[in-house]
View 1 (cartoon, helix red, strand yellow):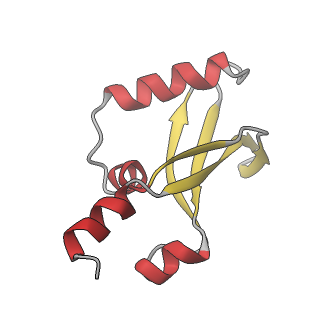
View 2 (cartoon, helix red, strand yellow):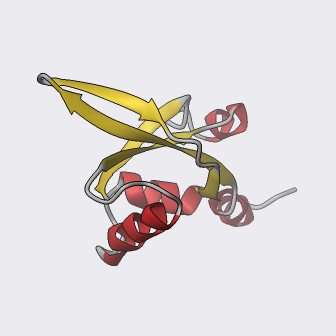
Length: 105
Protein backbone atom coordinates (compact mmCIF):
# COMPACT_ATOMS: atom_id res chain seq x y z
CA UNK A 1 0.00 0.00 0.00
CA UNK A 2 1.31 3.45 -0.92
CA UNK A 3 0.98 6.23 1.61
CA UNK A 4 -0.60 9.53 0.61
CA UNK A 5 2.64 11.36 1.40
CA UNK A 6 4.73 9.15 -0.90
CA UNK A 7 2.08 9.48 -3.61
CA UNK A 8 2.27 13.29 -3.44
CA UNK A 9 6.07 13.18 -3.70
CA UNK A 10 5.98 10.95 -6.75
CA UNK A 11 3.33 13.16 -8.38
CA UNK A 12 5.46 16.27 -7.90
CA UNK A 13 8.22 14.71 -9.98
CA UNK A 14 5.83 13.57 -12.76
CA UNK A 15 6.76 15.20 -16.08
CA UNK A 16 4.46 17.55 -18.02
CA UNK A 17 5.04 18.60 -21.63
CA UNK A 18 5.29 22.31 -22.39
CA UNK A 19 4.07 23.80 -25.65
CA UNK A 20 5.35 27.21 -26.80
CA UNK A 21 3.52 29.61 -29.12
CA UNK A 22 4.80 32.82 -30.66
CA UNK A 23 2.18 35.55 -30.13
CA UNK A 24 1.66 37.66 -33.26
CA UNK A 25 -0.54 40.76 -33.12
CA UNK A 26 -1.76 42.22 -36.41
CA UNK A 27 -4.61 44.65 -37.01
CA UNK A 28 -5.90 44.21 -33.47
CA UNK A 29 -6.04 40.41 -33.69
CA UNK A 30 -3.87 37.92 -31.86
CA UNK A 31 -2.56 34.87 -33.64
CA UNK A 32 -0.49 32.03 -32.23
CA UNK A 33 2.27 30.34 -34.18
CA UNK A 34 3.52 27.07 -32.68
CA UNK A 35 7.23 26.92 -31.97
CA UNK A 36 9.07 23.65 -32.45
CA UNK A 37 10.44 23.45 -28.92
CA UNK A 38 10.09 20.18 -27.02
CA UNK A 39 10.37 20.56 -23.25
CA UNK A 40 9.19 18.61 -20.23
CA UNK A 41 9.20 19.91 -16.67
CA UNK A 42 8.00 18.59 -13.34
CA UNK A 43 4.38 18.90 -12.27
CA UNK A 44 5.59 20.79 -9.21
CA UNK A 45 7.03 23.55 -11.43
CA UNK A 46 3.88 23.70 -13.57
CA UNK A 47 1.74 24.16 -10.47
CA UNK A 48 4.07 26.89 -9.18
CA UNK A 49 3.82 28.78 -12.50
CA UNK A 50 0.03 28.40 -12.60
CA UNK A 51 -0.30 29.60 -9.00
CA UNK A 52 2.19 32.45 -9.66
CA UNK A 53 4.45 31.37 -6.80
CA UNK A 54 7.73 31.13 -8.74
CA UNK A 55 10.51 33.62 -8.13
CA UNK A 56 10.67 36.58 -10.54
CA UNK A 57 14.09 35.45 -11.83
CA UNK A 58 12.36 32.38 -13.32
CA UNK A 59 10.81 34.48 -16.09
CA UNK A 60 14.13 36.17 -16.86
CA UNK A 61 15.81 32.76 -17.09
CA UNK A 62 13.01 31.42 -19.30
CA UNK A 63 13.32 34.45 -21.58
CA UNK A 64 17.09 33.97 -21.86
CA UNK A 65 16.65 30.24 -22.61
CA UNK A 66 14.13 31.02 -25.35
CA UNK A 67 16.57 33.49 -26.96
CA UNK A 68 19.27 30.82 -26.87
CA UNK A 69 16.88 28.39 -28.59
CA UNK A 70 16.30 30.77 -31.49
CA UNK A 71 13.34 32.96 -30.53
CA UNK A 72 13.82 36.56 -31.66
CA UNK A 73 14.35 39.17 -28.93
CA UNK A 74 11.38 41.50 -28.48
CA UNK A 75 8.77 38.83 -29.24
CA UNK A 76 6.13 37.45 -26.90
CA UNK A 77 5.80 33.71 -26.22
CA UNK A 78 2.83 31.94 -24.65
CA UNK A 79 3.64 28.84 -22.58
CA UNK A 80 1.07 26.06 -22.20
CA UNK A 81 1.14 22.82 -20.24
CA UNK A 82 -0.06 19.69 -21.99
CA UNK A 83 -1.36 17.19 -19.45
CA UNK A 84 -1.62 13.45 -20.02
CA UNK A 85 -4.62 11.27 -19.07
CA UNK A 86 -2.67 10.07 -16.02
CA UNK A 87 -2.56 13.62 -14.69
CA UNK A 88 -6.34 13.89 -15.05
CA UNK A 89 -6.84 10.73 -12.99
CA UNK A 90 -4.85 12.31 -10.16
CA UNK A 91 -6.52 15.71 -10.29
CA UNK A 92 -9.50 16.56 -12.54
CA UNK A 93 -8.22 20.13 -12.98
CA UNK A 94 -5.16 18.80 -14.80
CA UNK A 95 -6.92 18.06 -18.05
CA UNK A 96 -5.98 18.80 -21.66
CA UNK A 97 -3.86 21.87 -22.38
CA UNK A 98 -3.74 24.89 -20.09
CA UNK A 99 -2.16 28.34 -20.56
CA UNK A 100 0.48 28.96 -17.92
CA UNK A 101 1.97 32.36 -18.77
CA UNK A 102 3.23 34.74 -21.44
CA UNK A 103 6.87 35.77 -21.52
CA UNK A 104 8.48 38.75 -23.25
CA UNK A 105 11.70 37.55 -24.85
